[in-house]
Image (cartoon, rainbow, N blue to C red):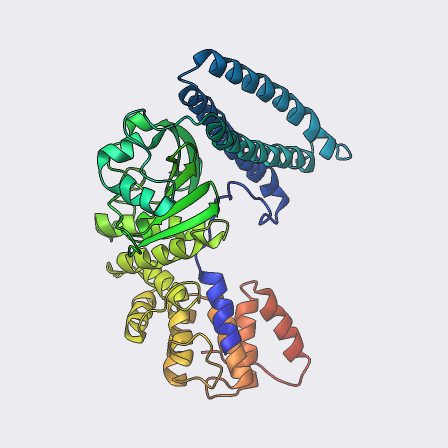
Length: 451
């Protein structure tokens, strides 16, 4: 019983068709290899362009007291970048030399190499300025006002205090990451998109004040001696922002990751049975959950929690699919578990569709437990829901009821009825049921009736 429950959970949990920006290791189909590698290459190129522009902007700021020397340094950077691009483009075909040119595997290998080398180059360029600024003892912050502190904690308190300090201590070009819809996909499939944005174009303040000591909803992540991320969850899991700081002559805000989804990118009337707010919740649940299930991003936990919260919001409409997604996610052990009465209410609402009725049956057997492995708690009620799912055409329910008749999990062990149910599912093309019909058909048993 327990094994079936979790197999069904795996089948029904939402999944994303979006590709991770920087990794195609999750791809298992050859048809997905090329488009995934194209996305990875494009994302890495965008990241590289931002890093290069940030470096050039900070060189201009660092050397404002000696512009001639700054121009000479910038020229060297340009020369180095041109040479590196030629090296990358000549080097990557070597990694695919033994693969026939033009074949998907060849394109995938070259694209993956370009993406990897571009990410490495971006990281290299990002590290140039801090060492340069320290050597030159010049500040990337505007000349007015001293650096609040060399220690990050007191710096952050001073930085977040007001709009003016945030404006003064933000880099000229900021690496901005936002979530955008994937072209050619449905409007609930999103991926991170990075670009360089002028710090002067932001509306300040960028973050609410952070007081000394531990601030609820704010996490400080030390990447290394020169890089710190501030993860701000005060607006909830659906609106997390990550602020990237780097130590130069002073600490400077150099990047902002916005993991929220704008209403501009959502459809207010996609599901006519839902209100505007519930439509937005459902699409956010699908999008944020899809990103979380990739398990490619540091905010995996927050993204999946946001998915559950938004599915619960969408389920307020009584929509069966949203209710089922919320209930299944609650039992998946990937998000917080909802209260028993809430989960049961969600399954009841979901039972209007075949998969929802079958899900409700498993809940009636196992309850609000993720590790229950005993006998079915409410076998008759569970059987009613399975039969309901069958009358709505569920092949999975036919196969499931067959297995319970064969094993007696729902209180009745009847091999002839098991054979009848397997045959019903086999007639719909279910391979496991076809195999079971052959297995039981070898015995002197005649099929009776399934339901």
